[in-house]
Length: 389
Image (cartoon, rainbow, N blue to C red; front, top):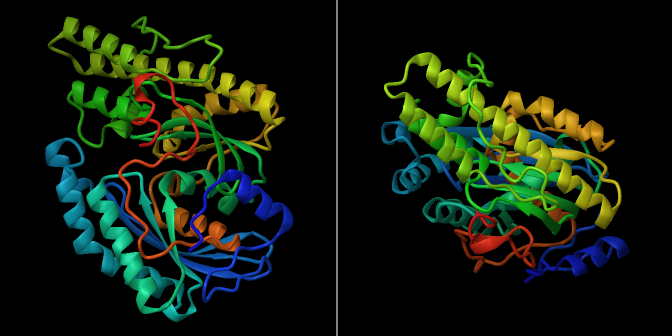
């Protein structure tokens, strides 16, 4: 069993190019790898086949994603039981389609990767169990992937980004600034002490009566709004750390909405515009602090990378570009389809780990929470909650 995830051991493995050996597995750094990836941590059922070439470059051979938006829309959010049942119903067919589109068979795979967490535990169990069955039947190595690590490594698939780089990971469940030093080697520089950015967008949408999913609806409404109408706070502005907080901003929006009730369509647009502008100002300030911390501890980053579903928001591109330019680094944002949850990022993370000889056994456990940087301590009482999921 090769189960170690200690950063120091991984750094030594990369430095010496000595690959740990697993029974029945004989990999070298010069080998081309073909990996099936399965993603079921939330409300997307996804599978993909990715090729990792000997030079470290990658190619997506297939990437099938089935969203469950229609199933959850009547409830205004993701219902875990419905999500898990949908994964059970859909996953076998999606895996078959991914393999067919890639033009390959299970016997040709170098490994099978599945997101083993963090996420909704019912869905995680479905994906990981399916991957274990495929690996067992076809005598193929299994890689249990941290969903956050998959986001962190995506720019190496899309843009061949070199280590080290600074990652801004923002989604419905995660808001973190992370130093990505190598495969399996991550240092969290900042995190949210309450709401994740995507979560805050969704809650504002629900508060204002906008349909699910809320994030894109807020972005759309903000485009027609006056961001200067309301004097919303910019949380954590100017602090030397790189942490985020959005609960106070969310409360300020609720207070203004209550004062204006009943809301006119333009009121909603203006509230969304003011909220989004405040989030972007806070985000830019927090990222600036994170990049300063990165430079102090690790030197100049090779890039600033934005990943996660919030990175698909077009409005954040301008402040991201400005922050990267000020830090004299390159901005890397994967295509929108690879910012949101997908199987290709899981397959790629599996291939990156497999190239180091890192695999998992059949007792790999699904995890509702799983820190990306196992030795980190997040601020405040949320040290083991928002930071890990």
